[in-house]
Figure 1 (cartoon, rainbow, N blue to C red):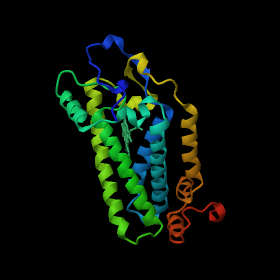
Figure 2 (figure 1 turned 180 degrees about the horizontal axis):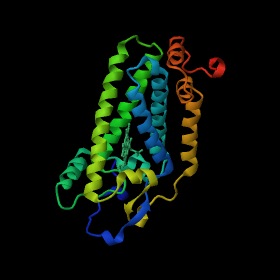
Figure 3 (figure 1 turned 120 degrees about the horizontal axis):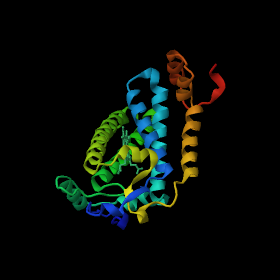
Figure 4 (figure 1 turned 45 degrees about the vertical axis):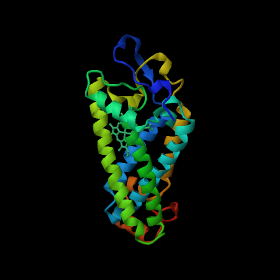
Length: 248
Ligand code: HEM
């Protein structure tokens, strides 16, 4: 599918016609920062047995967020939809070449190169989630351990490229892209703005994640400072998904 007009390159020769417009809805922003947090947390805790429950909880959060994003990519607002950033290899090459020119292509939604990193993160993230689920539930023995680790490292690599891309793009376009993922605003023409921030969906997503964290031993116990032995013990007796009965 090709990108809708909103994502077509805009010449930087008409700066007078652009203004600050709302581009990223709240659910996309909540998704982004919770995804970054859960990935970083799960990666850091991956090697430690005493943090295994926290790792699994953040892993489930990561996978759940990706499932949400797959749905939001179809029913979400204009620039959150996959149809807005469905770019082929030629668009990616043209975009990358333009970065070396004096008029780098500007996209109100995701740019072609960035969109490929996003798809890689989403697909790699699904592979991490599925292999992690298999591992945690003893499906397929050790077979999934290497798959899980491979995709964890592959996604980390893509994330590093993603962050470098965000920095380069911000510098070339003199636009603070990280801030746009916080407040939702970018430079664009008024007709390209989304109609509303979708606060309710964003709040529901955040509530679902925090509710999950507070009801799963791993993260809840970490938040209230349970001793490491208790977490390890809970892990060895397989109570990762259990609720309150045993923790005081
Ligand atoms: C300091 C760290 C990070 C910064 C500053 C950052 C910044 C950004 C920015 C500015 C965008 C929008 C790019 C655009 O304008 O097209 C974006 C999108 C995205 N980022 Fe990051 N990012 C960070 C970390 C991460 C991490 C750790 C992950 C994944 C584990 C991630 C996954 C994504 C995804 C999936 C999108 C697409 C958002 C969507 O459309 O739903 N980012 N990021």
